[in-house]
Length: 611
Image (cartoon, rainbow, N blue to C red; front, side):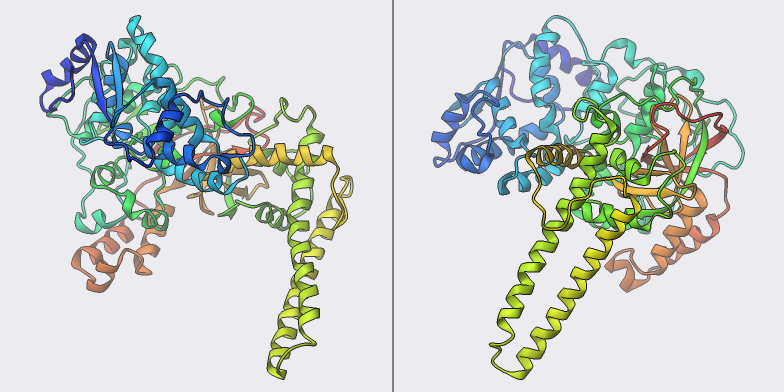
């Protein structure tokens, strides 16, 4: 039996696949099993996935849900190198205390945790929890199923390996590449060295850096030593992480759908957002934040909580897939040159479109009723919130539109009815107030409540008057069963597509969805060969934002108190770098209603530099 290994030299890395595939068996010790959970662990092993999960939610069986959560929080599941041992081992046994767990038991446990659409308290809490902690569990069933394929000599394409490593932890950054060498098809490890230019193009800024405490400690840009591309991905202990991940990016670009690297690479760079996740910024992650924005970082938090648009959409996006991709990498390995056409600059962003209230208030801010797509803003919004038409759920476009109207009504009406009940309680309590002061306070609260209700009614009437062709229920009216079913379907899809995305409009009037670190001033572009549009921040705009962030003193308590020389140097460097070059920083994917399936006519493509 093989239990562990030591990582250190190239030969050991190259031998790991051979060691695991030739071992008679691998035992996975997950730890001891608490006595209180032992009975439920036995039942979990006999519970096939989905069949025994109650339709009403996990709250009816919290014992099995908690047992599954305990099992799946074992550290083994998050480790990176276990992917190789799971795929290649002839026989693998999972042990938790005295329990030997089958693959079916692991799959059943994931099904228990994976139910996020069920409207019960436990499910609502596990949804967000699962996004940040448990993305790697999403791939466990596919990982276990792949064992049979590997026994038959099959291997993964590169993109499947990158999916498998999301959310996993590694001791070394380079392990995100090295741990998959034995599992990836040899043809997918080849690199087209012709992608790299032989001479540096002018006015290319150096790679962007970490925008947090590491920047205050080390005021240096990435060294611009010429990093040449390898003929193929390989294990090289002497290579630094930047060189390894540069070659990973080149390997992706060498594939037929290489421009999809922009989807894989998107990660947040907003100072406030990074500040909110200090506990997530371990040293191994912080180091990769210094990579150029177009080089993928499998260890980043946002790489696993933000699903690609193609995985959420009902139909395939083909924005510019018919156009050939001619991406090139600079001689120093810090810049990606691509052909892109601007769709518009972002001027309005809804930072938290979690509730339909944010969506209808967003709609009220729009000037006019029809956008440049030729549809009403209401219809554009109905499609954008669920990332495109859902013909399998809503057979006609009118169904999607009707569903959004019902969602707006349901949200507004629930708030209105709740306040109506509060108003009745105020009318009951005011006459029996114990003192004049208490009565005046209650009357003031009542007036504020009535003003809020009047504002709510006014907003709803405004929506009705702007879009009179829709059937808007009256406040307080009960919905029929058909409308309730339509509303539930739309809300269920919206809950999956909205996660970590924000609504935006462009100066030209287009409406869309993008990552939550999107900001006014960013620019949405079509990219040759890309299946979706992408948002970018201009180099000067990013420098101004960072300078403003420094000057407001939001760089962190320690630096704010001491005002160190390095901190002052960071401000000066940031100020001097404005105007350094005409370059762009990748923000992420964007859904733009009217441009997702090649509707753009004669876009004006230009060569841009992405750093």
